Structure formats: structure tokens, C-alpha cells
Image 1 (tube, rainbow, N blue to C red):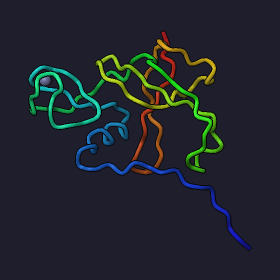
Image 2 (image 1 turned 135 degrees about the vertical axis):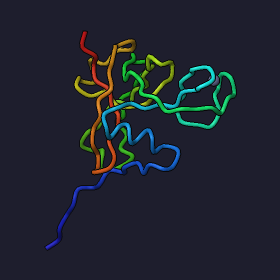
Image 3 (image 1 turned 90 degrees about the vertical axis):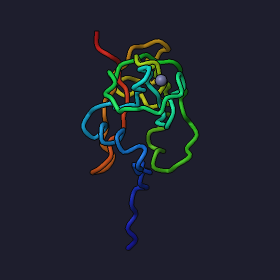
Image 4 (image 1 turned 30 degrees about the vertical axis):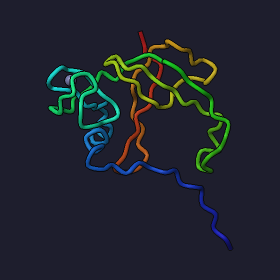
Length: 140
Ligand SMILES: [Zn+2]
């Protein structure tokens, strides 16, 4: 008898650069890089500030709040582990900190997603050591 298993989703593997981000998501916090010299937030993580070129950087907790900048509904199945969810949304969120983050909107139908909709981060465990940030419609 053949045992058939569900295809497994690819899970991010945190590295030295992204570890603070993933430690945050595991703890239910959205951690982003922030410039100590000018205060500008940045995403993705990188060595130098876009605004002032400083390399003096810290990781800080972002609000997790923002608005939908843009979104698409993905019908194409690029990986079999996501087949059951298609069509699923891929959304770009303008975070209140001034950076954009790509994630999925959860907690509402795809047809209810609107540009400008206020959203807040939620965290979905995908393994024992990794949680992914997603966004849901923000209450009030
Ligand atoms: Zn700066």
C-alpha cells in the first residue's frame, strides 16, 4: 500500500540577517530594522539606511498596523502545497512606519479586500520555530 502525504509548504529558514525578524514573529511581534541616526524604518533588512546612509541600526517593534496598498488574487499554482487555497491573495501593506510589506490578508474574503483598508498583523505558526506575519482587517 502506498502512503500518500500532503505536499509540504516551504518554510523560511532564518539566517543571521533575518533572525531578529523571525524571533519577533514567533513571539507575536513585528520587528523591523530602524536607523539609530535618523529613525527611518527599513524593510527588508539591510546594512545601510536609505535616507541618511548610516549603518547605525537597531531592531525595533513596529506597530503591526497599516493599510492595503495593493493586492492580487493568485490563481496560478506554483507549488502544490498551496493548491487548496487558490485563489489566495498576495497583498502589499503600507505599514504605519513608512515601509511596505508583502503578506496575505486573512480573516476576510478575498472579495472584501480593498485598497486603503486598515489592517493589523497577526502571526501564523508554520513550524515549531517559524511564524509568518499576515494581516487581518483592523477593528475600529
Ligand atoms: Zn538613517
